Picture 1 (cartoon, rainbow, N blue to C red):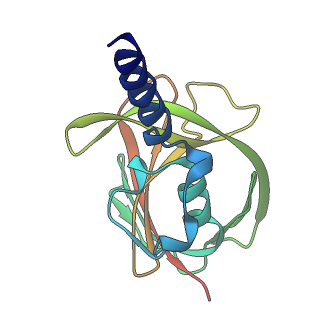
Picture 2 (cartoon, rainbow, N blue to C red):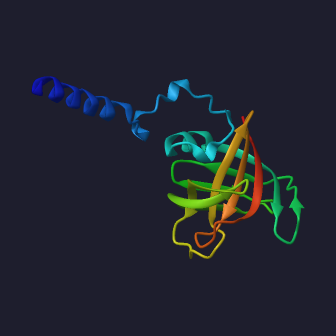
Picture 3 (cartoon, rainbow, N blue to C red):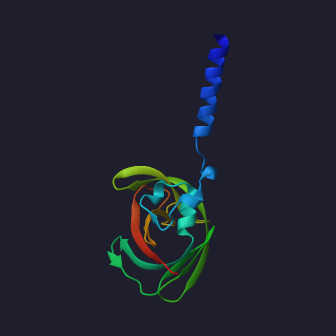
Length: 160
């Protein structure tokens, strides 16, 4: 009886250890990186894979200016760097890291990964989290580390 009980406990503990998935255990070959509805709920490697590349900024909406539709603004994301070519032709290169943060999405508070510019004050609007990607259109919200609310939304289209 004691042996049977011990066997069941070991079996349950073993099953528990193998059923927990970790971000390192993601099968990236099974993911359609051009279409993820709730990108903010994904593990960091999936978000990074979706975001990497060159993007044309289609619109930025929010704040006191409403919506802006730049004609020649591009962003290029790599592992820890963003190159931004703005409408005036200026090119800015910034390094960033990924941080976990509580944000508000559709009136719900969720923890997600944000892209945060290195060396920037926490009250600056230097954070960005990614909402979804649909047919190579990426939707992102900007944020501060000191607030759960987004400041404005950016829509970008992948440059192929």
